[in-house]
Amino acid sequence: MSNAEQSTDVKALAKANRILQKKLQRSERDRVLLEETNERRLALLNSTIAQLQTSKQTLEERTQALETALSNVQQMQSQLIEAEKLSALGVLVAGIAHEINNPVSFVAGNIQPAQDYVQDLLGLLALYQADYPEPSELIQDEIEAIDLEFLAEDLPKLLNSMEVGAERISEIVRSLRTFTRADGDDFKTADLQDGLDSTLLILQHRLKANAKQPEIKVVQDYAHLPPVDCHPGKLNQVFMNLFGNAIDALRDWEATDKLDIPDLQTSQIAVQAAPLSPERVQIRIQDNGPGIPEAIRGKLFDPFFTTKPVGQGTGLGLAISYQIIVEQHHGRLYCESELGAGTTFVIELPIRQPKVPTAQVTASLA
Ligand SMILES: Nc1ncnc2c1ncn2[C@@H]1O[C@H](COP(=O)(O)OP(=O)(O)OP(=O)(O)O)[C@@H](O)[C@H]1O
Ligand SMILES: [Mg+2]
Image (spheres, rainbow, N blue to C red):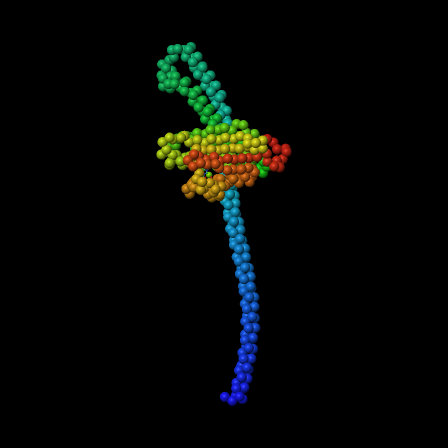
């Protein structure tokens, strides 16, 4: 190869090299540009993902809040329906009790004079018999026909039992009126003993022994309670729920497991109430029933929580009681229970409520 040819090749190579260098520089610039664009896009993508995650979380929180609000509304609706039903029932029962009260009063009021008249007539008869020891045959036959001796002995007893019965009806009517009294918005200062007594009286038929079930013994120890600021009718509703639950638990237990236990205990409900401090009172309603398993103790006060078959329990009793004691009366309601040993529901109430008008008249529950 001649020198001239060699020099032409070198030049061509140098030119190709320059072109390649330029291309390399351009592609390097493009690469840097592309990387920068990629980084920007990645950052944008990351921020979009973060924004999406935040909105997803907000959405989840809102859904959760809406679900809570919906379930609150449903609970409130059921409690309102229940309260409405109870108040309608209360009005009905109060009306009937009022209507029964008058006729019962005159039956009860006339029995004592009737007893006096009967004693007078029997005395007079004895006098006749003493004066005329030999009555005519007609009278003699009649004396035998009506069995006068038995009649004279039985009639006062009969009147006595009528008096006891009429007194009992009056007591029940009084209790019904106490139990269904409508509470206004203001707190009243009332004796809780009366509410406990009237509730237990209303529940007598469920406590008594009959062909199918033994008696549930009730031990009452609540004589020394001070009057308490409260809505008495509402508290009666709570007592009714707690006694009702204790009776259900005891009857249920009697019907199943308890019968297998050889050392059969008498079913018992003990009610104790006493001041807890100068400011508070405590009422304990204790049964010696089956107790409540630990696993469900946390759910007892949830609306609609029930272990009873459909139709026997709505699961609202304790939820409503909790609302009455805790929210309306600023007290506490809790449960102590041991499986197999029984359950105690404890109510704590402040003796005085805030903002009670000073002119409040002391009202008895009776
Ligand atoms: N004294 C108790 N002994 C055993 N379990 C109880 C007792 N009191 C309540 N429970 C349990 O708590 C559950 C909830 O009681 P709650 O009074 O709220 O509803 P319920 O009695 O089932 O139905 P409702 O009172 O609405 O008729 C009951 O189903 C029962 O399982
Ligand atoms: Mg109940």
